[in-house]
Length: 107
Image 1 (cartoon, rainbow, N blue to C red):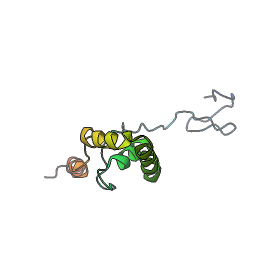
Image 2 (cartoon, rainbow, N blue to C red; image 1 turned 90 degrees about the vertical axis):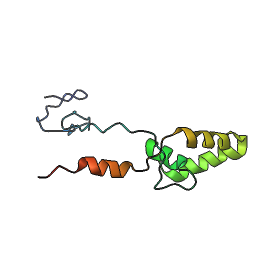
Image 3 (cartoon, rainbow, N blue to C red; image 1 turned 135 degrees about the horizontal axis):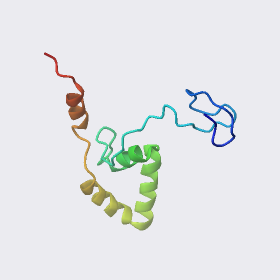
């Protein structure tokens, strides 16, 4: 197997090229698709900002500050927060359901 970027010969088990750092695709694990949901564990009011931060994989403080800037500068942020709170599904009980389905049946 050869690196597609620099042409160096690679071993079959290499995940990265030793010269240029290019990803080879060996051993790649596909992550499950993320869903936008309200984060009830880290919420302050409704969990909208915490859910968006979890979905986008950024710090929740950044999302809250940006949301407040938009809310106070344009006024649209307050209405958008209420709409998002109603429309985005909650993750309440999601951990319990995942734990019940992950437990193998014993005899």
